Image (cartoon, rainbow, N blue to C red; front, side):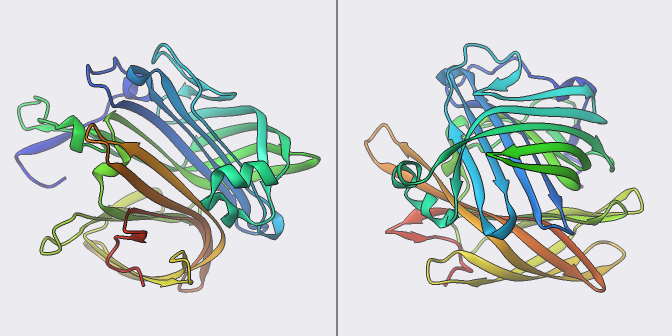
Length: 344
């Protein structure tokens, strides 16, 4: 954030749960992903504590060989914001900004065709539930990116809870080792990824659309691209992110993402252009395996709002480097169609 009217704060204690604000939609979320580029396997894990609503959002998504996915989502009841521990998934901070552990013991739905999750009720009914066990050690390989924006004098920014997605957010590229077991398949993990944390009021419908691409070519080279668009087509989308090279982050000043789509308006590939203060990069992406997810909320007026989030393990290329990561596309659904301007 380069505006002199604001600054960004990030303290080691921000790695731990905060005192919830007195708003119904307070959310404290931790997320991480990991991928093995050589074997094209991996997964992502998220806990979002919505303690003032009495539940957590818990998700486990494992990308298996052959395009299969093991997936589970739940809203387990919680009564405090003391830990990231819900529905069998637990994320612990060992050393702030340096090391985390992730464990999961429970079930996942084993999907040969992950696109069935567009209709979750049917997908869960028609596919087997199998045991899943996750034990991962997560180590930072980069500085921290982001934090909590505040006014220049340190006072909090004014936030409208009903229009908020998060008041604070930070990310870090990581190295991850451990094991993931899905049914009778044991996966040894020695890969790379990205983690993030956010807190503050959140509705998934507060963002009109976004494209979020975190990916890693190696411990010496990684990126995260973010483009966020609003409802007003005359206002340019917000472009941001960072490039990791040799242990240092360079901020992305401009980026573009041109996507390819299939008949269901799911991304199949993308061509990206990235500019930092010193360099320009061209990156291409090719989706390996995709699962469509959704969030629904009914307003006080009885209107049902639907958000679609497509989560795709994606192969990336930049110059002579090949990497792997996510392409996460969020769109509000209006009249059955995703709102993003780049959709077919």
